[in-house]
Image (cartoon, rainbow, N blue to C red; front, side, top):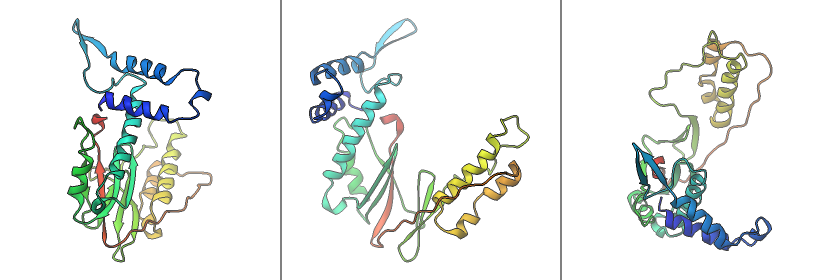
Length: 243
């Protein structure tokens, strides 16, 4: 993350905030002087040698996450606003380091090249994964395209998933054991969109291996997703260590 550009983004946000004076008596210049001092004072010692971090924000600083979030928010807006018409995304859902894209087929590389050109330092690079076998993952959700172009949702599990959950004979607090089942049920009914797929979830096997759960369980309605047949589903991944 280029600190100088991030500071510029924060300055513009502060200058455009008409309610800033109601929350602090500090002027924008005062805030920026303090912030610049914090993010540029990045000295540390290793084996009796003093070093200074030259690029990016310090990992141990409580200011760094705020700085990174504001910069990535600016970068996201620039990505979408300046994207060429032919590759402008129809859907853009960003959470932490994952982005779900809905984009016209054949424009994946063009959009990737565009958003990788926004960061002037060239240190934040997006990679992409395309829909494969009419499926693509996003966080712990697997999106599956039907023949009619609509989308159903499943819970995504890695190939290395072992189906092993908390053993009831373990020395964990008792309340943690039914919580495992509650969590799986909540995820099943919140994510999985079709009843037949809900029955295939791991909840029953987990219930048998953990314990019989007493008390009522809540059920959340599933969410249906739609898209258009002439668009493809595309997912982006941003390496965490770049921000």
